[in-house]
Image 1 (cartoon, rainbow, N blue to C red):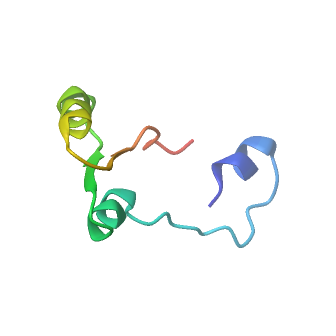
Image 2 (image 1 turned 90 degrees about the horizontal axis):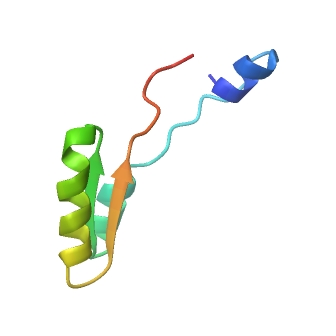
Length: 67
């Protein structure tokens, strides 16, 4: 379901989309990837990514609560 469609008052129709795991994709491409869904883990994840010698991606789940 699409939050934008529900917020706009429109019918939800054929929008069951799922994002890939971007952190896992970064790892598969040879970079550093980490998934963060707890605000308490964010600082450490960012510091590790910045200190990493090479490409790094921090995937942050920011809106886990549905409307």
